[in-house]
Length: 147
Image 1: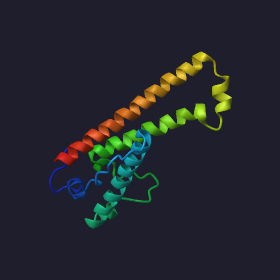
Image 2: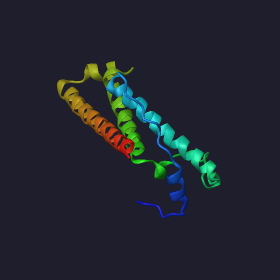
Image 3: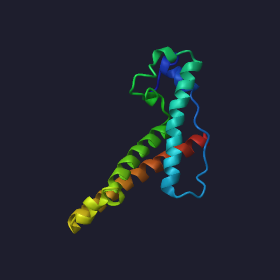
Image 4: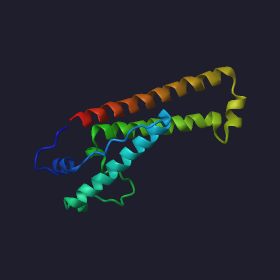
């Protein structure tokens, strides 16, 4: 959806700037993805607030409403994918706690082979969703650098 020139949304989107590209380095994939996506989400929020303050539009948004997310309609595509990847990561980590978390002995050790197999299937689904979102983030981020 494209905002009309002169509108509030148009002004904010034009004022926003992407986070400078970060090289992945040699960190493990999951650690790098979590750090990069977290940085993108934090930047989206901080850059949104900097823009609305700079444009004199901060009074139109309530920073202390308890819900946040005012920046969501103004995120760049790569920031939206980074946000989605973090959602997948949270679910993956919660799922993995059944095996390695503080209560794992109450779950994993008493599960039968069928239940453990179902756990692995779900873990694969969550991991695939996480990787898919991270790769979407990377491809949209790369496209941004070409422009």
